Length: 353
Image (cartoon, rainbow, N blue to C red):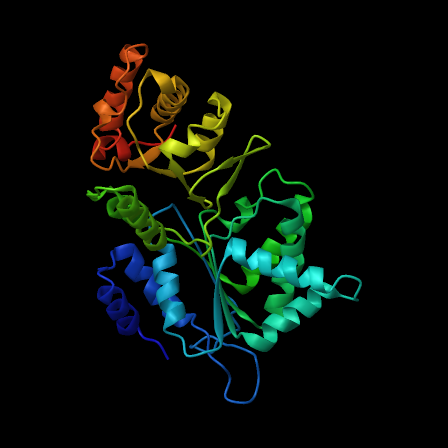
């Protein structure tokens, strides 16, 4: 059985000293940890034995340590378990349903598969946007709970605020209401944005290979993400190439992304959709590449106005020297000034517009 000390010690090994809000949640979560009954059963109970509990739904603002703490609980459980990013979980469900096409009650067969293999499931970044996923989840969450599979779920939103304005939302919300009667719903409130602090730390790189490695490390440390990079970025019903993206971040190559026929509406969509943008693979450009310069300036103007959080990896190139032409000299002067300001703590701590 896990104790407060187990979890806090495990966090300190990772270099994390929990703040007050995190410690309060750990105290509560300890009482709600999964435990098998003494006889052969898949039913779980609270450690205080007062009533049944099927898991924890932890939500709150980005960077408060939701994933880190739930993952620490999850990793210290000696049970049959599986961790999923939300995208990977839904990909698994869709894949299993495709295999079971034409069979009776395919969704229940999928849950039976999960039930046979896992006692605890952790789904990170639980954020529903697609109508097909919403309808599947409306059923699967209920069945998982009835099967007494213990759930750890993390999200940026309260269950009542998931899938806002979505089609056929009533059925989905009914499932979320049922879930709230079976899971502990807890908001993690904290003063510090640990993700911001981690990402803001100065990173020195001298090549694209080094910046690729640094960005991959930041993504793995600060975002729950599918293991395989997602290089197809769908914006405004069009597809562009990026280095990777998740629910909360996108990683762009200066040299590749801004060479594509992007426009202001695409940049606005990126700024509204993602919390963080990483940009690397910079190279020197002149008036022979006015297309890439104009697009990049437009993107920075929009990102600056929206207060989008960006981390640049200039790879031995200073911002003012990226463009060496004359035709856009005045516009570039303003842009290079903004590139430098956007790397300051004052800018990064400002609220997104």
